[in-house]
Structures are given as structure tokens and as C-alpha cells.
Amino acid sequence: MIRHLHSSAPMAEFPLVVSAATVIFCLLLPSSSSSPICAARTQDHVRTAYHFQPAKNWQNDPNGPVYYNGMYHLFYQYNPHGALWDVGNLSWGHSVSGDLVNWADLGTALDPTAPFDANGCASGSVTILPDGQPVILYSGIDADRRQIQNVAFPKNPRDPLLREWTKPGYNPVVPLPADVSADNFRDPTTAWLGRDGLWRFAISAVANGVGTTLVYRSADFLRWERNAAPLHASRDAVMAECPDLFPVAARGAEGLDTSAHGAGVKHVLKVSMPDTLQDYYTIGRYDDEADTFTPDEDARGGGDDYRSWRRMDHGRLYASKTFFDARKNRRVLWAWVNESDSEADDVARGWSGLQSFPRALWLDPAGRQLVQWPVEEIETLRRGRAAMLGAEVESGGLREIGGIASTQADVDVVFEIPSLERAEGLDANQLLDADAVCEEMGASVQGGVGPFGLLVMASGDDLREHTAVFFRVFRLLRGEYTVLMCTDLTRSSTKAGVYRPTHGGFVDVDIEKDKSISLRTLIDHSIIESFGGGGLTCMTARVYPEHVARGSSSHLYAFNNGSDAVKVRKLEAWELATASVNVAVEDHGLATSGDMCTSSAY
Image (cartoon, rainbow, N blue to C red; front, side, top):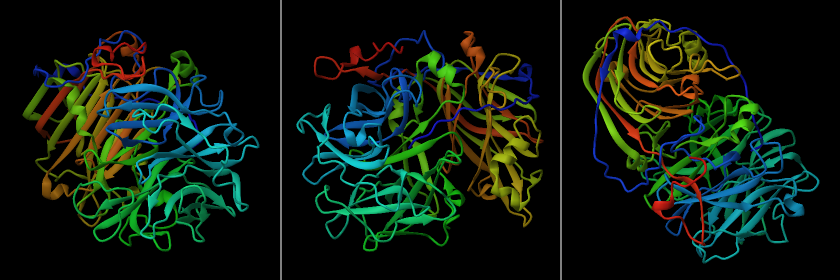
């Protein structure tokens, strides 16, 4: 993927007053984790505590997440020359972890040093061959600025850390086809093995002017032939990049190896659209004889226009990539989360870009959409705990969750809705643009059933700065109900030049039957990831509150701006310790736990 964006947006008002708040203090729990606890951070209030990022410089796409020989590896697009995308040519950064939480930096795995990648080592993947050898398949931008496909192999296959890679001189293994645009042929997927014994990978292209996902086949991973038919094509989209094709179990949360096929298996096709900077997916059937993908008839937006498909995340998340974690038998998703302030801020900080916290994902029981949830290893960071049980939040009310450091926290809450009688009406056409509904009816706009939810990264008594993550319940014309989830960033920062949109997505739950809905929110200084309805709707946002930059503390509240009271059936909030992220490897080995907080980033 090759893209970067910064933009800005206006602010709005919020009427609730803190003077009416009830404060809930925490119950301190003893630590049961072996994860390293890093010293308090004294620099860079924007830098995260437990999200993946290099110690410095620019990063974007996750390229080759893989579990290999007892270690998790993450390769990612990285600019070792500075904090901006377009200064220097991109390399592949490389880090390893034993738990998906604490990471050690291994420097760069690939650098643009050959004619076939002279202008950059762009996105790609890692595949484990049957003999256990990993191989990188990546897009190189050659000396003539054409996008071509190359391979790289470990220099020492016995090195468990895979620190050095070699690029054979016979690259490219897939040159630019005659009918494909020279600057739109990139992002090969993790390869899978068909029942005929041939390897396949999918890749984004513009072929004869049509946005296409192509498939290539090979018996030896070196000589590749293009399939006559595309995996999928869309005349409604010029280019869809960063494709991902992976199997999911039709029932249950168990993850499947990328080559899985047969009864009880469905496939997910996901693409990233550079015109919207959003990831879209659909569920369907992959035919491994024809190498084509057909969306299910009941899949929402199963047509040719990718932008009518479901969104992987309704906020600021892009270029997602999954891998099969054989250690815990699950499929795990990574994604790039870029900045929302200015390039000048990137340069001043010396870094830009995060990875989302890794998410396990599986098919929902209805078989219509994916469920996403933070991997369980995040619980090893939990320290202090605050709890609220059965508390009522009246109309216009706030309840503070106090006693924990809410700038790095994990909050899990279930809201109970006593009555749907005052739910507002919503036209069916408005279901097509949740962002617009959330923008029109933000957290400050009083409603019938909702808005209710959380205020996070909130400044003191004036609430001049805060981010609202909330729900509203609407009644449709035929009498059924729908739940809207929003993240309102209009008051997230008073800093000039910060992009402050309102994100929105509908949550596919039966609110009339359940009369309750859950919300889990991960807070980590400048990133907020929220999971509504048990992970059916996900929303990622970047925030840059000035009160934190000035050294003031942040606050966390449950709020309700609906007409009737709502009940907090259960709320638990954990303060999270600072993970060790990208400590250098010294003396040819990983840093020990005692050394894992010595990075200059903290």
C-alpha cells in the first residue's frame, strides 16, 4: 500500500456537567502477570504504552505477521530515514514477540538495495513452506518505478529470530504483466496450497483499466502463472489494494490455516480502498479449481462495488492483514492506524503511525459478519481495577470511574435499557451512511434512547476536551429497532490542525429482545479502539488532547444524554501497565525481562 493523509475538522459543544458526577473508585488487584512493567513515561504524551510502534520513524502496513518456531514475527512498512512516508524509500521493519504484547526490534529485514526494489520494498507477506522454511513474497518498485513481485529467504534458516534475509538475483518472480498498470500491481497475500498441490497467492492490480484481484499459481514458489480469471474484479473501483483472502469456520471461533478448505469452511475476501482509506470485506465461497471468489447471496453488499461491503472497522484503520496463529488456533488481525494531526507534528515527534492492538476474529453465529476482539494476552497488562454494578445513569448524567490511570486502560461495560418507548425514528436511507447520522446527532445532541456510553480522555471539571463513544437506539418505519454506535471526536482536542471527525456504524443486535448492549474500549494515550455488541462493530480513533500535553490528568465517565435513565449492569475498568515495545536485540539474543524497559522511547 502506498498512501498517507492528514486532515482537520471542526468542534462541537457538550452540555453535561461534571458537578453532578458520582465517582467510583478502584479496587486494587495484585498482579498475576509476568509481563514487564515499564517505568512511567516522561516524554511524548502521544506515544502509546501497549500498541506496536517502532522506537522512531514512519511505519504503515503490517506486511508479514506470522507465528514461527515459537515466536510471533511482525514485518511492517518502515522508513528508516525519518518520520514521513515520502522521505527515502521504504524498507521492511521486523520485530519479534513471545506474547503479542512485548516486542523486540530486529532492525530491517528488507531494504531497497537491488534493481528489482531500488525504489522501495513495498507490501507483501510471509508464507511457511511445507519443509518449515519461511519465504517473503513482496512488491518491489524497480529502477524504472514499475511494481513487480519478488521473493526473499532467510539467510540462516536455523536462526529462530530470522534476523537476516537474502534476495535472490533471479527476482522478480512475477514481472509486470502487459495489461496491468505499472503503478498498480502490488501487495501479494500470504500464499495457500490448493488441493492440486499448487501454491497460490492473490494480488491487487488494475488490469485493462479495471480494479482486479488476480491469482497466481506455482508448483515451486519460484515460477508463477497467472490464472485466466481474476479472483474478483470491480468496474466500480479503479484500485483495491492490500487484499486478504482467508478461511473461517462456518461455526465456532476456531481459527483455520490459510490453506484450509472443504465442508464447514467459508472464505473472507478483504480489500483496502485508497479513495476512502477504509477496509471492506465480504463472506463467500472460494472455488479452488477455478480460483474465483463469489460472495454469499445473503452477504450485505455482495456486489462488485467493494465500498458496499462491510467495513472491517468504522474508524481510522487501514491495510489490515491476518495470520493463522497455530499456537492458539486462532486467526489474528493487524492493521495500520495513521496519525490525525499534521506532518509537522510527525517530524517534531520523530515518529508516525501505529498498529492496532492485535485482534482475534471469527465468523458470527449467523454466518453474516466477522467478530473481532482484542487477543486475550492484553489481560496480562491489567493492574488496578475499578468496578460499577447496577448503577443508574439518569438523563443528562455522568458517573466518573476513578482511581485508575485512564490514559492507558481497558474498559468493559454492559448498558441495560429499561424501555425503548422513546426511541427516535430513522429513515431507511439513513442506514446507508452511519457517519452522517453520528455527525448530525453527536454526543451533545439529546435523544430518546441515547446517546449513552463512555467519555474517555476527558479533561477536568469543564469537559472542554473529551472523546465520546456511545450508542443510540432508533425505530425504523416497519417498527423494528436498530442500534447506532458512534465515536465523536469533535471535542477530543483543542489543538489546531487535528482531524476530529465523527465515526459511525450500526450494530447488528436484537436490542428489543436483549434490552442491553456491551461496549469494550481500549484507551492508550493517542488511540482509542472500541468494540460494540461483543465485537460486531469496531471503531478506531486517534486523539491528541492538549490537557494531557500540559500535564493534567484525564478522566473517564459513563454518560447518558438520552431522555430516560439507563442502567450500567456491569462495568469493569483496568489500568494497564506499559508493555515493552521494540527494545533492541543485543549480543545476538533477545533482551531479558529485566532489560525490556530500557528503550529510549520511554
